[in-house]
Each structure stands twice: as C-alpha cells, then as structure tokens.
Length: 254
Image (cartoon, rainbow, N blue to C red; front, side, top):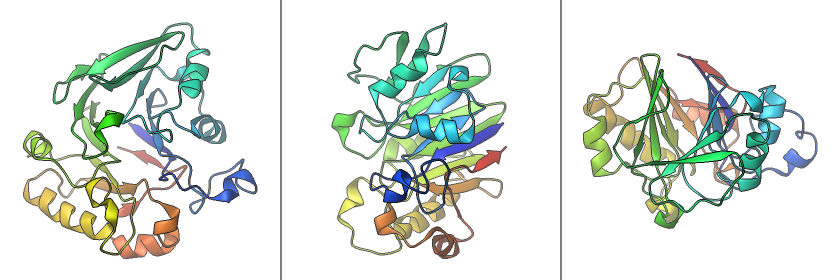
C-alpha cells in the first residue's frame, strides 16, 4: 500500500510557492496538508491540492473518495472538490463528519461519518472518524484507515488525544501514525488546545507506546508544520529523531 504526502504545511505558506517552487516540491516550501492513499483515496482537498497532484503526476480522475478532516480553508475548498468531480463519470464520494454543513457540489455524493463508527468505503477499505481537539465549528475528525491489513491513523489539526480516542485505539498497534506538529520545539504556545508542539509530541508518543497504540513496527511521521514556527526541515529532523518529519512528495510503502 502506498501513502503519498501531497502537502505537509499549516496555513502560513512560503512565498516561494509563487515563484521558484510553483512547479516542484521543496522540503522548506510546504503546501497545504493533504495526502493520497493508493492513488485513489484523497485526504483533504484544500488550497493547493490541484497543484500538488499535478507536480506529483497523480491523475485526479482516479480519485474515488475524498475524506475531509475539517472545514478550514486550507483543508477544504469546494471549487477544488468540484474540479476533481468534473473529471469523473461516476459521483465522487465526499466523506465528512456527521453534522457537517457541506455546500452542494455537482457530481459529488456526500457521506456522513458518525464518530467511532466504522464506515465501509469499498471491499478493501474501512475508515473510522475519531474525535479531534480542534475548533468544533469546523466539524473536525481524525481518521483511522484500515486497508490491505494495514492501519493508518491520520491525526492532523488536533491537540493531544481525547479520552474516547485513547480507548478506541488502545492495542491498535498501528502500522503508521501521522501526527500534528504545527508548533516547533519550544514551550508556551497559545495553540495548546488545537495543535501540538514538538514537546507535546514527545509526551504523546511515550504514552501511546504505553497504550500499545504504537509499537516497534509503527512508522511515525510529523506533519502540518507551520514554517514560521519551525526550524528548516533538516534541523527539525535532527531534533525529533527517531521520529520522522513528513515533506511534500514523500511516498511511504507499507
């Protein structure tokens, strides 16, 4: 199974995206966070998704399902959903948290995800929407994917881990964890109720190991980094080792 990071940034984007990086990926000029699983399952559809797909040479017409983590503009753009849907002969399925308010988009079928309730997407994929400690008016959810015998927990835009998620994920022994790391390696950031910092991540990972949410086999990647709050990519990698820092264009095979 292939997991492709199309974007790994929080919403303070580098001006280089408008100039020397407009047609290429760069570890220090990140685009809005989104990802693609097996070339067909898209996680978030925000500001830069069409550019990211173009640069990665991924065919948008092959996308069957889009999963929205929340409705901030860097993660959801109706026009970009519409653009992808217009390339398809069959309706594009848009998976959102139950209760979310979604604009009507031509050739899009909206699927609502109750929390902690497995949703069978097709014969090979099951997805569970979990709670996210983020602005509730954006209908946030973290996502647990189970595909080809592998488990991936995608947990961006949410601080810490809420009680219900701990119970649900205990002993999950994930194959991959993608964790919010919006803030850098410092303490005292005011975003503590919506985003993680590197010190928070260190505490979280230690506890997730105790709960057997993650283990020796788990690939752990930090994403949704705010460039203005972090050192350059290479320095951040050294700071968080042995954890990994995701970057635009990174493909993981599980």
